[in-house]
Image (cartoon, rainbow, N blue to C red):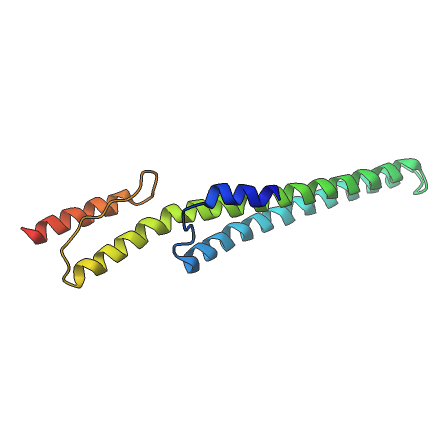
Length: 151
């Protein structure tokens, strides 16, 4: 329920999937990188607890000792923490990935449509990007080029 409210507040009145093919692929790369990172850290956790168990065995502590039970509980606690952290990370990456890709895809979408508009013989118009968008220099370059052709 709280996630739905957050998404509604973030995405009201705007279409954040301007170029779904690009944006979903972009998001997939981000989530893929996060998954690889998660696997690496989870593997490190497993190795850490295995090394502790090996050390305890090497110094002669029997497997029935309560220390092994304590380690098993701590390992399970870490599993829960990893699951919670991974879920939070995935949610944050999804939101920030869409917002970031929107700042990339939006300007390119605007530039493309204005170029098509101009190419169809319509009255040429300059391009403006939103504050905070990426590739602001493309709008400036397009507008300078347009000025040259209009003269």
